[in-house]
Image (cartoon, rainbow, N blue to C red; front, side, top):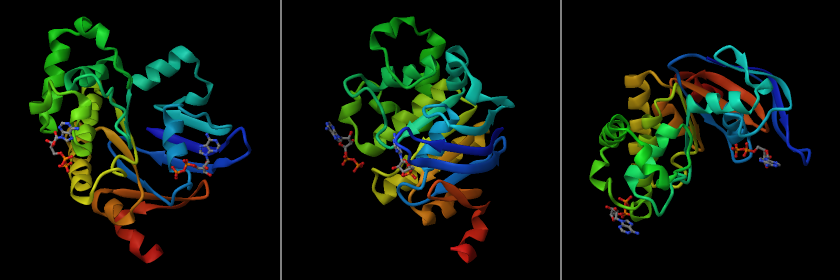
Length: 237
Ligand code: ADP
Ligand code: ADP
């Protein structure tokens, strides 16, 4: 469970990224955050794994206030949170297999020189993860030989290999064309349902949000301005 209690974040230059956000995200939910560019979606998502640090309020993950965490506690927190980014964040010159194995390290940087440290179990899990997003045939291709949609599927496989409790996807389809975007959203939704991974996705477009989300959170200027089931969105917007 993730709980925001009066969470605000003011960047060092004075810009307010979040203003008194109150939210509870329950186990297994698939939540989409929508809002215009600059609304605070990315700041909200990045607060949860402490890539950015809120300046006020209380932010709890599994009943612990992560705003007081030290370095060791943050590393533990990040192993249970899988991140997916707009630009995939793969190591371009490494092959797909190494990129996905990096999920076992619990973060999103690959250390190809440590390839031999992975067990057969890790390797089997990486291969299974690639199969779940139908990209196993590219296992020995370099990441930069893949199309955008294929790279995003590899980044989903990397997150699956991490076996996280939460998935945070920051504009995962913003660089993809509509059919590929739907494919990626379908995989994210399927994984949420099959593995019960609580998932939060930032999206630009409300129509896509309504198609996939149970619950939609609308943001504007750092504030939550809507929070409800997708079915209630049309009347409010
Ligand atoms: P979104 O993801 O909805 O586009 P962001 O969370 O990226 O919104 O940004 C929210 C606000 O915080 C914007 O006004 C943005 O310009 C500002 N912002 C984001 N990152 C920084 C930063 N590192 N320093 C200063 N301001 C920032
Ligand atoms: P999409 O289906 O997302 O439009 P592309 O048209 O970009 O994909 O790619 C089609 C095929 O070409 C894919 O199988 C991909 O692996 C391959 N491909 C794309 N970019 C490159 C590249 N730079 N080098 C080698 N193969 C590539």
